[in-house]
Image 1: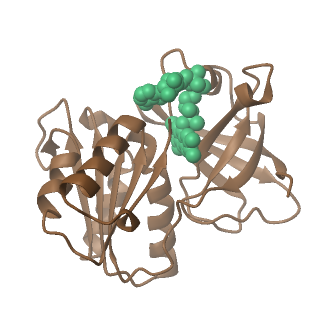
Image 2: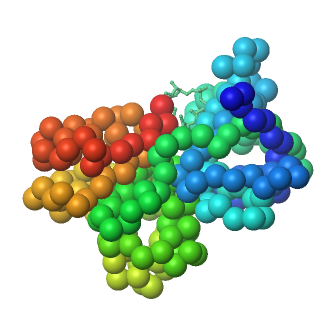
Length: 241
Ligand SMILES: Cc1cc2nc3c(=O)[nH]c(=O)nc-3n(C[C@H](O)[C@H](O)[C@H](O)COP(=O)(O)OP(=O)(O)OC[C@H]3O[C@@H](n4cnc5c(N)ncnc54)[C@H](O)[C@@H]3O)c2cc1C
């Protein structure tokens, strides 16, 4: 089936951290834009001649609802074509063309397994969508542990939201790893030692979901499957690049 293209108006741009902004897009479509928590869309941005040079994918960071609003949290990459365009040129009221939703990195239908969500930086986006959905729908879940990594404390994304969920739900845990700063209540270092220690003893009923850039994902997959011996079916990931 050919991809369906949409247009969306940028309604808000919010600085989340020194390098990350949240862009809100209002889908302009008669019919409702439906997606599953964790999916992404692909924007067609005027940053190249060939269409593949122009396409960039972004995970939807909010839960599906009927407002047609989509939120994206995007990292500005030094010299990155699309992100320089999004950060330097795009303003509220502008229209972006996109296709989607796509992707199989979605909230599992069975939440009776323990879930460990591992991410760095904007890799938190699909997990925010999944968690918002779980909370809003009042879904019962066994245990969820969100492990978020970034360099400095000013790069922690959506901290208040996740701390709020942790206060309200005893079976949700939120751990933050800062690789370049010592800070109270945060682990110092990368995300890896956190799950390596806590899930060292292999369990059948735990699912690891990992999102971010290749170095972190490669390391996490190697740790979980090769070192700790988890089955491939217990490790899912979304690779940003
Ligand atoms: C399914 C999917 C979902 C995505 N969701 C998001 C999202 O929610 N938020 C988001 O910010 N990005 C997301 N991305 C990445 C996004 O699509 C772009 O690749 C990113 O914004 C860079 O585009 P650019 O044109 O600015 O950089 P380009 O001009 O394309 O240059 C990027 C180059 O730098 C490398 N690179 C880019 N970022 C990093 C990094 N952080 N660390 C190391 N190397 C890097 C790339 O591999 C590439 O070689 C997603 C990618 C995929 C495939």
